[in-house]
Image (cartoon, one colour):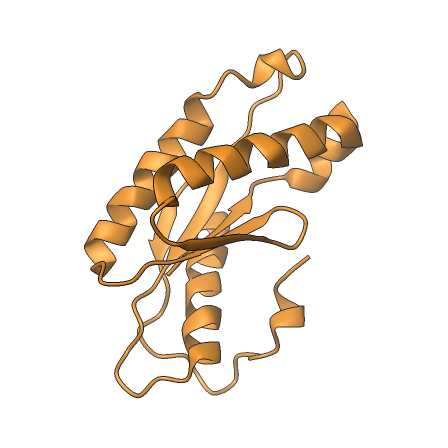
Length: 143
C-alpha cells in the first residue's frame, strides 16, 4: 500500500487561496492516477491519496512512490500561482501474514508521518509491526 499526504497543504490554501489548493489536489490526483492506474486508488480526505497495490513488493511500491514524488516535485506549479511549490510525503507498507487490515493501513500512514517528520518530500516505510499504544482510529490520521 502507498499513502501520500501533500506537504503544507493548509499553508498552500492560506497563502495561494483555496482555489489554488483545489487545483493542486486535482493535479496530484491526475499524477497519482498516471502512476497507480493499474491499482485501486482513492483520494482520501482533503489532500491524502491511497493506492492498494496487489502483487507488488514493498521495494517496487517504494520505486513507484519515488517516481510520483519526483513528478510532483518537478511539476510546474507556477502555472497555478507564482512561487507555488508542492511536495508530498509518502508511506509504504506491505501487508504482513495474518495482519489486520486496519493495522496495515495505520502502518502505511505512519510511513508518511515519518517522512513529514524528516522534512517532507520523502518516501518512508512504515513500521513492520504496529506498537500497541498507537491509535488504530483512522479519524486520528485523515483530514
